[in-house]
Length: 115
Length: 112
Image (cartoon, rainbow over all chains, first blue to last red; front, side, top):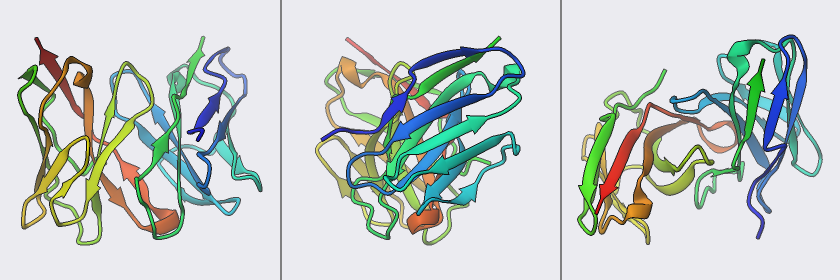
């Protein structure tokens, strides 16, 4: 049973560019959350998607946007990249209903470096 | 803002029990406590979660105080592979609006 798959694993972008990160949730999961983890810090919640809608959003600017597709996969888009956007971006999937047997399953992340 | 406080680092001898404390004094009545660990900047790995009762699974035990203001994660027989950053997390919200609020975590070093 495949877990959460994220692509690409590593990415280098130039300041001012735009980037798209992708996530396929664990089989059977319908909710996707995105987290940003700066070096040496705990992950910070960006937003969560369920039924193709953004349900919750953390304290991140509008440069960060996302999308969820009918097959539950998701994309994270970041516009006008800043050096401070360099981080590990984690995708987590879960079952959006009240039943949460094992919590959230995380992918291995995408390491984004902005130069 | 994080809702949990953990010691930044701890050591444990291989084969001994590792007891990792967590303070979550502002937790609300319907908020779950989750524990995850992260090895070498891989994705966080689920360990255990609970609401008010003590929980045990094949990886660990979770002891939650009666007032729910603190908890302890117990790894009964630590191995070198348990060296990792351990996050005590409060899950805010429920169902499809729940989110995990991470703190800084505890770096556990298991020594031979």
